[in-house]
Image (cartoon, rainbow, N blue to C red):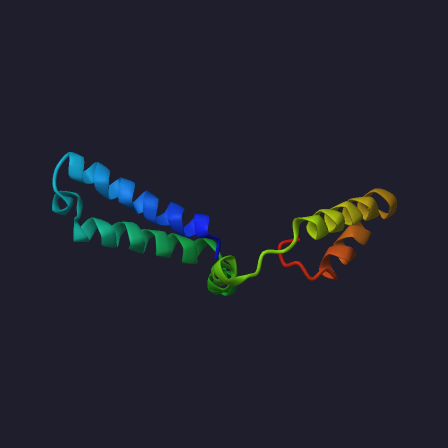
Length: 107
């Protein structure tokens, strides 16, 4: 995980709490029923909108965000340029096949 991600996450939480504390106490901004309505509605809307398989795969993707090693930018740029050349010379169908054969899950 990148150090900036952790710093940004905790700084964001800190600024939110600081802003709340400037205009009152933390307890006045917390309402259990509201939390359940927001979180429950978000989960329900997600499950309605997407197949269960895709929703469960989200956890794998989030795990990769924090555990995947950083790839070298030069290699990634070269791979994208190669894919652009395939699309230009051979067409989009060839590009689809080339992308399916790459090791980079982002591409």
